[in-house]
Image (cartoon, rainbow, N blue to C red; front, side, top):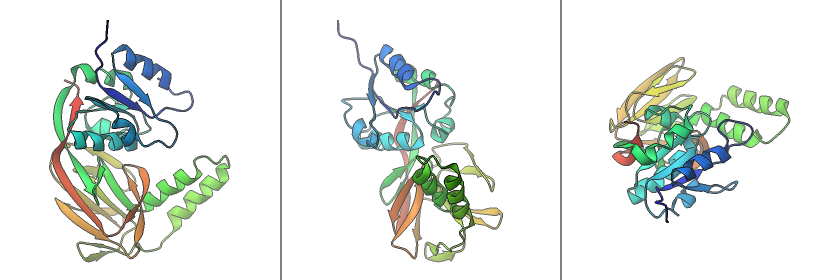
Length: 265
């Protein structure tokens, strides 16, 4: 007797002894009739997601993995299941999921309620959370570069250099120069303090929010489109927490309610 397949789950495997393990997640998903696709090191989650014949289409990993799979969901108008299986899982949190219960999130394939949420674009690349330039982006790039090194002192030294660099970014926002060490463009409004990014109250406001760190406070504006230019042809960025190099000028826009997601009842 053939078992009904309830969508595809793309899994970015965990390393180490975190609970649940990758094997436990895979077994739980397959027991529910969900096809599982484990990513190989360096494999593009979006390409793996395109193997899906129909939805729902799930992503188990951090925000970078979820964002990549979400781009395919928007392309094909399939509902997304975000399974919190990474380090921070900001999107899953803001969508109302329990970040400590990835196994429970699998039930969304069967009984999740559909809603539509916004996505952001930077030069046509999708982001779910935010795009950051400046200090935070440099920290993300240094973290990625040194994450496989065993020399802890070298990692700490690299992070210290990133924090103490004071080179101006040479940015303009819609043609007006800005002096800042951090610039953040967010999909919907965040609650921010100087040292951390808080939560979003909603994901369907239909607005981008631009944050510029000035001294010890944030200057904020909301918009549907914004253009950020830089002196360099390419800039280091963090896109949904993942390192990226983007060609300037950066054209940001919001796509209201472009993504279908499944959430708890």
